[in-house]
Image (cartoon, rainbow, N blue to C red):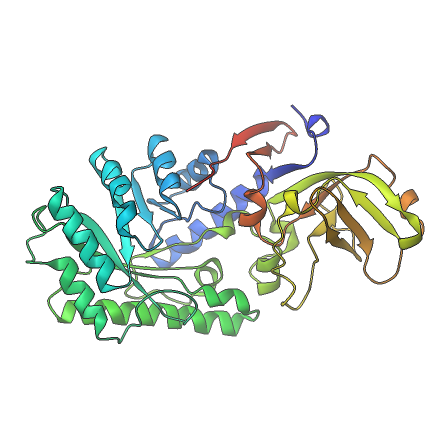
Length: 383
């Protein structure tokens, strides 16, 4: 299949750009001397994860147990479930571990740590659990200097034997500096990367000073992974959106529009000439409602239109989106000749604000090779 045979709207992966992005991140992690565990929630696609593994990634990170189940079935066994575990999800986690999956869980509170330990003890399983550390006030986690960090560590460590009779064992600490998405200068990103590193390493040190094991120190976001000056004390890094990048990351300053590997293929279906609009068959059901660039230095509306060879249509953006209709317009002045410039039937690419959200709108990707051939790569859904 070739590009002109694809029905629109469709999620299109530029495999050349994707592989370049993967190589860039892996090379950086190799240079910094840490293992790399990609977060596969961005693509939720076996072929993409295989490309990351082939480049040198060790293990994967997932955001749902459905992802863990699907990727384990596809041959990935070293999996971190990077959302705080609750008791109701432990039976599925147990089933994965009993099937041979090396599944790691995370907690950030004593109640969840106790629930894991008790469930594991009841079922003769010792779950490996990492403690989530809050290094930037962005979301969840235990602050590095909080007293409860040690209480959680003791609950997970139990008697220290690490046997199945306890139900859990402390594997390490992890953090995610999500506030990096709000930054846009190299100095600010480097400073946050150091804050992320130092906070997680400090938490690990406190646990070790109490005689508690902490083998893994895991940090990461795409911006901080690319901005870190050194990673002393860190054992692994996690990042996800780097595989495709998106317009939010372009505004953060860690990529250019030429690095964006995911786009939506769309067709012009009509015009409102008096308003200078071209109407597309890609609305928010294709692009998502994510308006992540609205609060950044450059607002891309619902996405940046490009020609089929990837060249941005300067001055134009997807200014509006209904469920199945997108509105493309020149943001500086109405283009009264838009029906001439972009006649009905014209095909375009729209670069997304948030690659994870846009990818989630589609059951599969159309993966374009450098020879122009298109392969269908299926995508996972659900929780």
